Amino acid sequence: MSNIEQYDEVAERWGEQAYADPSVYLARRAQLVVTLGPRLEPGERVLDLACGDGGLAEFLLPFGLEYLGVDASRSMVEAARRRLGERALIERGDLNDYEPPESVSATTCFRAVYYARDRGAFFRKVAGYTERKLVFDLNPRQYALDAVEGDLRAAGFDRLETRPFFTPQRVALPRPIGAALRAAERAGPLARLALRVRFTLICAASRS
Image 1 (cartoon, rainbow, N blue to C red):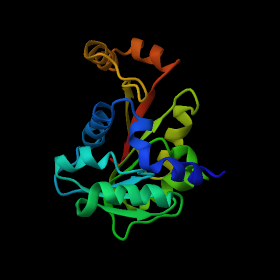
Image 2 (cartoon, rainbow, N blue to C red; image 1 turned 180 degrees about the horizontal axis):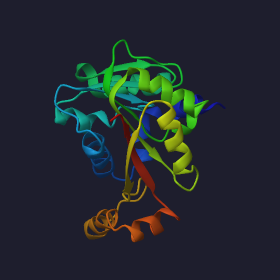
Image 3 (tube, one colour; image 1 turned 90 degrees about the vertical axis):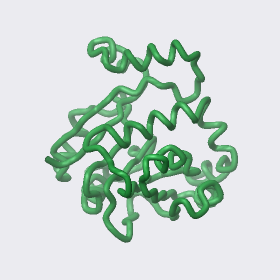
Image 4 (tube, one colour; image 1 turned 30 degrees about the horizontal axis):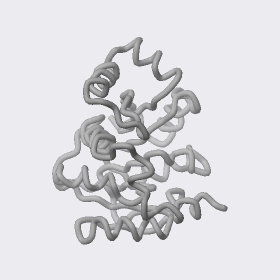
């Protein structure tokens, strides 16, 4: 079974299966899309590659942003269109090959950079249609940040801002514990220690 077929099978119940508390997880992700790196302003368009069922859009649209979602799974695209209706544009496409009809302010790619057939080529393609920044998540235990930053620089993104993201995807935490983890994201040595065993970095790549 291909990766796309696996996502086709779970599209209808993706949100409830993928996230223990999507209202917390996706809201925090959306906040960082807007604020990490150059801040996005109302009216700007975000291209969300590998958008799944469009759940992130629910938390980006209140910022006044326009949303374009793209996913390779036909069932995910259908689920996103049902969710968002006329509030957003959803298209089917592979993140390696897709190009939007016009430039976008920001491109996001969550839990999917590893689907790039050639990471450097993917970054170069995104740089060609992205005016302000590329925002994605990275497992620093799986991918060396220095190597990723090198690929970004080669693609024209000469600035990289990162932020630890300590909100679990599949575990709903009591509010005090969640707040403590969010505070730890800014704790320097403690954050770096935590990233050695768990959690991810949110990366915002932009140009000077």
